[in-house]
Image (cartoon, rainbow, N blue to C red; front, side, top):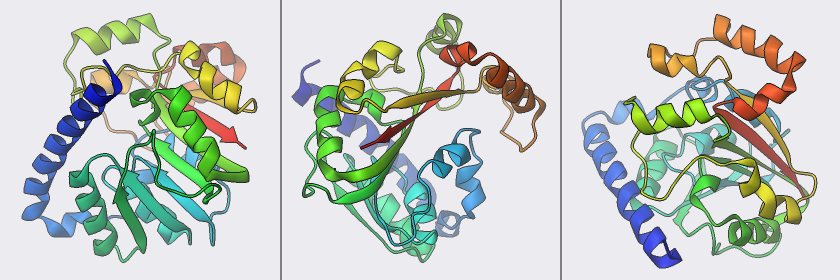
Length: 254
């Protein structure tokens, strides 16, 4: 799919999602407020990924594809100077409302990740969740390099496509939140080649090897869950298993 068609498809899909969410929150404004743990612990990789950003107080941080804005709120509570962008104006409206509901200062704007409207070296750190696999990483990677300051760090949490059994389940079986845009698919190692060329220090860490079974069991993540304890042992002793995990955390240092 060519770039213009892909962007139009992405915008239509995510604006439709945002419109549905706006109807829900229209009569439940109080639910926009949340504790940090509601975001940091909603999946097992989020909290450790956030720790890769280091101390963000007083730093300029970009929420790269901010979606509903929960990450922006958590970052602002930690003292970061937060800017969030998203392709969808509907999600920008939700993120703005959520920041207001939580008393978290952050600015939001509509933008395309492959053509960022920011000056060179604008940000000390970048956070992104489930965004890179939507993008042309050669183009988006160069934009990321441009806006990230020297010694800056960028952390992305992304669905991983290295497990053929999981990929089959993704294609064939229903599960909550399965809706996808027509051209998106989980990242694979070869997809990261353009990013590695731009950022040689890029690292990848896998999460949820056994923990992915939670989706089939329809269970929410819980601190200390036995699946996660088992994953902690297995992935520490056999890091090769990370290539078959459900998600990865990608850490980039400029």
